[in-house]
Image 1 (cartoon, helix red, strand yellow):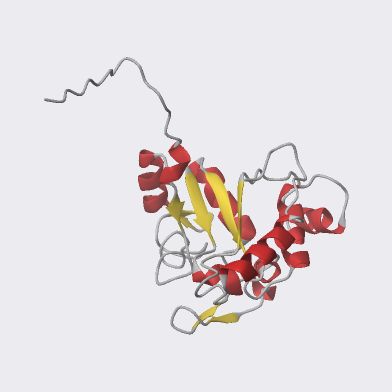
Image 2 (cartoon, one colour):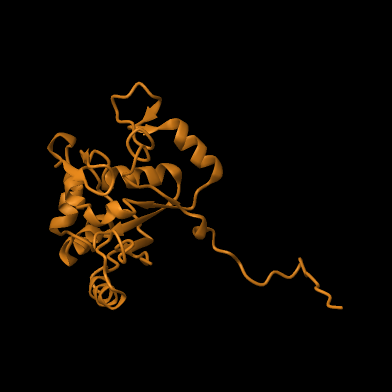
Length: 206
């Protein structure tokens, strides 16, 4: 007969809370009509964020929120989602119903959402249809406090101080909607892209 002894007073390992993160994609009503109702909405909101949802997520204390996808991440071009709303480029969301995406929920709105929820942001970079330069500039725009064209652009768009960005993904589902890539091809791309996803601030990017 075998006997198992559980020594509850002698913990061995600690499970990181970040594995219980959440996910936000431009799919259905997850973003528009979900997190983001816009500043003109009659729904109770704070800077366009649906307060009912914010309050619910605060109660469960989500540790991480990932955005912009999902499949949408590999067709998302971040510069289309910054600056004045009326000047943001529209696009067709080819993965999810062919809806017209107006980019009114972009980098600033997402990072403001994470600050409001007191959770860590996780951004998925565009490998499928993007470029190394585009990804590198996005990380610089978010995390650098140096005087560069990207940080000047961020300040012009209303954010003086860099954000913390602990998590950054190099593509999404690259075997399928992220480009139908073979494993060895994606591995080479990953090595290439991750070289330029540099830490611009004091915080490490995972």
